[in-house]
Image (tube, rainbow, N blue to C red; front, top):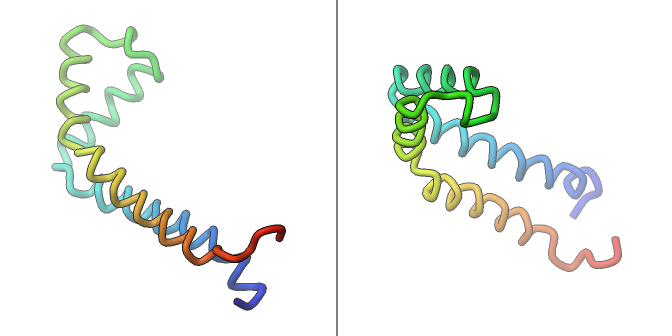
Length: 91
């Protein structure tokens, strides 16, 4: 494998993972995306910053993201990237 391609391969995997995440995010209804983003901003990363009903709404929106399916898509990209790096021990 040419040196430039070897150096680019990890970035291609990251790109594919990002693309899978964006495609997944885009499957959410735009109102759900906006509301989920609003709740994340309001919580500042701390669930206790949300009311009980907001936390319930957050959980419901996250379930719609189908994170297991996203994990499968991202995992597939990561595995494909690892296959291209076999035989490079010690480099």
